[in-house]
Length: 229
Image 1 (spheres, rainbow, N blue to C red):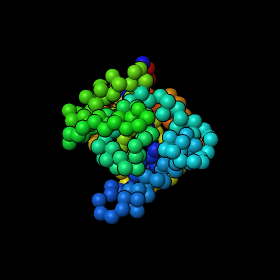
Image 2 (tube, one colour):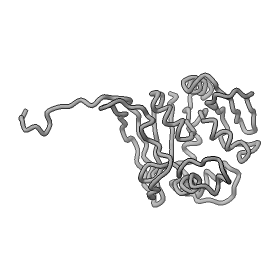
Image 3 (cartoon, rainbow, N blue to C red):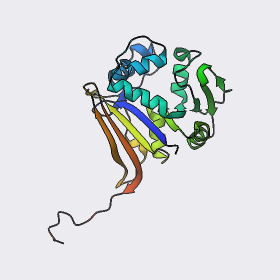
Image 4 (tube, one colour):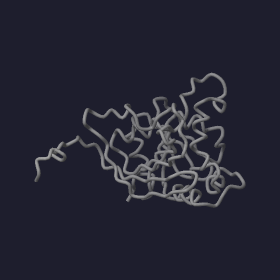
């Protein structure tokens, strides 16, 4: 059964990158970049990630196994336009996805076909449409919401996400781009409830996979009232 999944590396205080880069200067030298690389160092060191990027070296470890598992499970991807544009040159002619990618955007563009089975289809009629097209292309495997963080929030807010995996790095950034914040648009006394289904600890990062149960209002009861019962 196809599931819609997302995963993000975050700091202990919930940031997936430093403060948003304003476009001036080199992104690599920005505060946004510094925060991003602090929480994703575990990925860059993983052999499975490096092999997908065409790089040598890396560590064969539990973290690498989780990266390999994630790539294997994905039959199609959904991605934001900022991430797609930012990755187009670094990924080159043989991007690491090796599956159809559906890019959520307001700006039309012809589909890009790359080597290794990767294609980028630009979807202009909303997130739900992109997810549905990805489901059809996934051939029974998972639809992976690749990011960035804003898109993950939007998919979660729309009730389209089945699983969320957080890779929590043992670092406190103090400021930056927060994954779970007021942009989720929850009403008073409402929350999105999740159930942990897997926890994997390593020295570099803690991987927690959640099943997304959906929005629910707080229902008060008499616990703690001392009324008995």
